[in-house]
Length: 424
Ligand code: NIG
Ligand code: FE
Image (cartoon, rainbow, N blue to C red; front, side):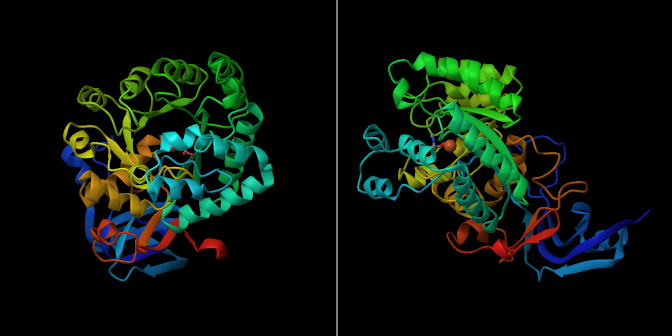
């Protein structure tokens, strides 16, 4: 029986379906499989995909309803919307002075010691009321959509006390309600030890475990718990305790791991059964092997190295060769990576991390959906999934990294509806 369609996208020169063969994350040589169909089409009904593949197969399997709309992609590349699986989009303001200092060679750690870094963004969030924080965060989230992200994870972590962490999480929840994008919420109360707890860090950890996590869960404000496990922040042991507490309270785990130092936190992520370990700039070979043997997704954040700026990039090539399921995200934040552009992340992943265009695109869509436990819904163009797709301003997908910093995302569709920026 033919399926009814109310929207058909035709004339897709390169249709990147990212279709799955076995519903598991892509590893090794499979990462480069984009499920590319030349001269493809996508049919949609009520925001979900009902047909996808070659123009002829789609045409013969669907029945357009009387009001069916047709879009001519004009031979362009059509692909799934980006799944940005690691962001700090809910922040009060940029930290422009720090960037000026960093490009002149002042290290991130020194800026942090002088009261900048995360502590500065915490002070900014504390002084901003909830409505204003919602307003500025919504503007930033719109920027993510403009650049083609149709699913966006957002973390708290600039509150670092009960009231302000909950304030951030409420803002994230409201963003999920008002935005057409799917927003996934992560509690990152363990982003730093707040200054007032410097000499009694155990008291803050105890508050995280016994007060904050239970309340966040009770109020249904987050799906994930995250910890910044790093020298001078939370030790691997402390991070493990916090993660285990979150996981037993019903949250799923993710970790800022092995970013500035090899602390064993990627292996810890495997041990606790986290969904992802993120950053991994300093990950060692043993930890890479452990991750490859696990279900933990390695989320790579090329913008963070680029923005610090640093020439230290995660060993992406080695991770792929050894079988880690990698994803790519922006880490959009006012410190290390003030960019919401997934195409830019793909460019950096290719130029500085040795990924191919196909690998980076699969990491930014299909595998990233696994990093958010949304693989049944988004990340590829397959029957039954959300009709979240992009029509690019190019005819060859390799232009995405190649033409870095240019406007490559032409049109953005979320649930079959076109996102037209503020006029949507
Ligand atoms: O993911 N690594 C820790 N946290 C953020 C940086 C946050 C900030 O500087 O505001 C990150 O890069
Ligand atoms: Fe981060």
